[in-house]
Length: 256
View 1 (cartoon, rainbow, N blue to C red):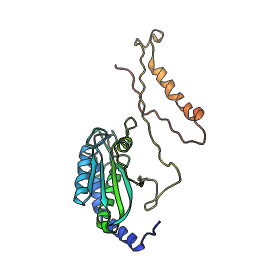
View 2 (cartoon, helix red, strand yellow; view 1 turned 90 degrees about the vertical axis):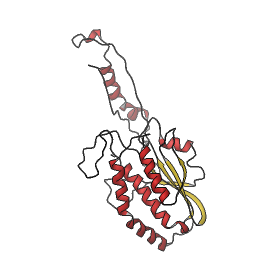
View 3 (cartoon, rainbow, N blue to C red; view 1 turned 180 degrees about the vertical axis):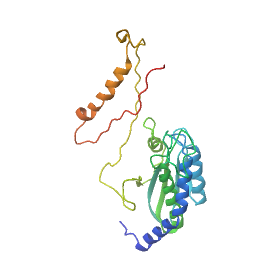
View 4 (cartoon, rainbow, N blue to C red; view 1 turned 90 degrees about the horizontal axis):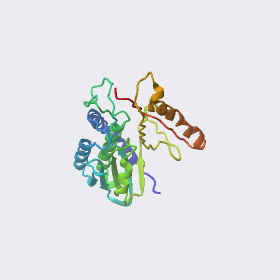
């Protein structure tokens, strides 16, 4: 492996610092205009606008049968491999209660998991790369992923299946971590973040009056027992050497 030129590292750091204000501004824009999984249409348009202004080639836009997601390349002035940088774009279906100038302008969505920052950070990296294009050995591919929060239809899976990683030799990604001191990077060998699968379960019972439960089939009791006993998957069905979390996010019952 070739050694990294310390002068180039210094230049990259200098460019990153100089683009801090613009990157923060982009993050505020995305935070104010959140879009949940598979609805990141305007976010995608904004990303493409910035990338094209920096001279990136748009390889593909739109994944999973939607207009969401972007793959873009910048070819360096020297021969080399293709390295991809990845960031996710989707927000959460939550109401924001933070009182900040860049608060979400949508009542039903907010960036509560840092994906506004991830999108802005990747665009910040794009700006730095555009300034050192001639010094890049090989190609850098940027992956702006939709639907990271969707356990039922994964944006990453759709991108891989539709060729986003073709010709890529390695991929790097990063996730903000509020509890880590500023300026530090946390890493480990092996998995460090959870991969989520979503699930829905429908129980059907028989209605009746609360004073005569013996004449009803009450699905709420069954649901409560299911929620409690799901934890047995972690304690009795999975090796203690593995890390597993089972969470029930929402339970809804009754129509009156």
